[in-house]
Amino acid sequence: MSSAPKKQMHLAAHFPGVNNTTVWSDARSGSQIDFASFTHLAATAERGLFDFFFLAEGLRLREHKGRIHDLDVVGRPESLTVLSALAAVTDRLGLAATVNATFNEPYELARRLASLDHLSGGRAAWNVVTSSDAFTGENFRRGGFLNRAERYTRAAEFVATARELWDSWPPDGRQRPFAHRGQHFDIEGTFTVPRCPQGHPVVIQAGDSPEGRAFAAATADVVFTRHGTPEAGREFYRDVKGRLAGHGRRSEDLKIMPGVGFVLGDTAAEAQERAAEIRRQQISPQNAIVALEQVWGVDLSSYDPDGPLPDFDPDPGATVVQGRVKGADPIGTARRWRAVSRAKGLSIRQTVIETTARQAFVGTPTSVAEQMDAFVQSDAADGFILVPHLTPGGLDEFVAKVVPLLQERGVFRTRYTGTTLRAHLGLRGPGSAAAGTG
Ligand SMILES: Cc1cc2nc3c(=O)[nH]c(=O)nc-3n(C[C@H](O)[C@H](O)[C@H](O)COP(=O)(O)O)c2cc1C
Image 1 (cartoon, rainbow, N blue to C red):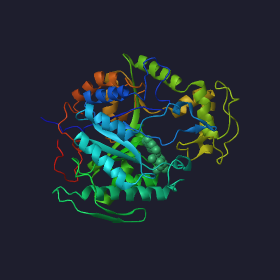
Image 2: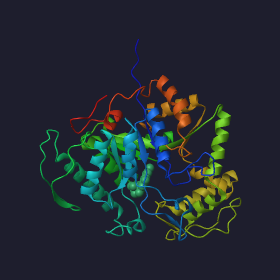
Image 3: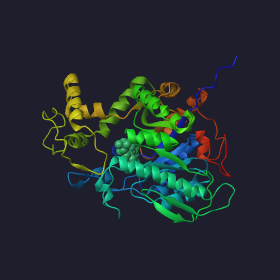
Image 4: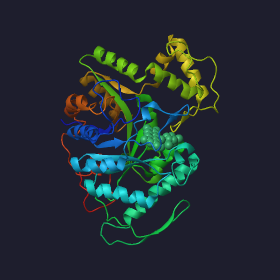
């Protein structure tokens, strides 16, 4: 008797880069600039048969109280350049770059993405982000920023224009001129890069507002989301997948992949202990005050991280942070944090640890494989973008211990059956000569 095949899981590796996810105080943490770090994580992901390697991107060093944020002082290399180099030392792994649609231009970016797709034999992906502040925009000729609705209008027109450029070299190879006349772009000419192996590089989207979700449903192949709990995941999944039919798309045309952490141990208790210790290292006393100041918008350096939270509400207009997405409702967040602190008797640092923890799978390898499988089978996601807490070796243990268990459960590939990222993700191609299938 045969049972129905189980839904297959997709996996991606997030290179942690500059943030406090990486436990920098751990002796095993290395550089996030050296090419050797990128190759280490990419090689591990490819050994684990992952769908793709993912790089986030910030376009300006973040500031906190007028000074460059401690975690940003080292900076980071530009994503498409790093991925082009990785294309040469990997074979099947997808290569995803976060690139901003507010500050770039379609012709230039479409060329660079099509070029990466050629260099990698059909493995390029573009995570389309829109950015949220004028601070970032000051780095660019355009200056400033667009309001949210316009950012997404521009992003949608940007992606549509890039696709027109890629399609100006149709699969039959007969190149033709393009002309795009729109609200944000008015361009014409000829595109210089011949049709790339995937036809269109894979498009990923990572915004969460109604505008962001509408954009994803209309345009994206993959959504990178923060909804990493089973309940929130199912609700997000239902909402975004429910919008697809309105665009003539099927559920399997869009993969939903939350960013999640993981902590492994030989026993459940050991894993829980390690997870708690990692959270304490990620949220140092200094990081706890920084997190508090980002919600309250004022200097709170006189507060004791082991003492109680401020008893006043934030001023929603005040800010100490530049260059990162601000929470939409600081007063609501502050009240929620105070309620958690009161109910559980937690200090400032303990409250920040409790309320800001990234969703993580914690347990023995068997338990983590079970939890991940259940998450996917219950339609809370189609897979995960795994965010390790060590750079660059944080995925080693997962690939050695959890991937074989996922394979045993019949929910993860045992070999790459296609050559392109579209093929790994099971996406319908836009039509191209070289895209592999399977
Ligand atoms: C999971 C996730 C990851 C993101 N990663 C980046 C990033 O690497 N670089 C960036 O500039 N913006 C990033 N963003 C910000 C989005 O592009 C967008 O500007 C922001 O979420 C505001 O849009 P929204 O209101 O639709 O969420 C990310 C957003 C989400 C939800």
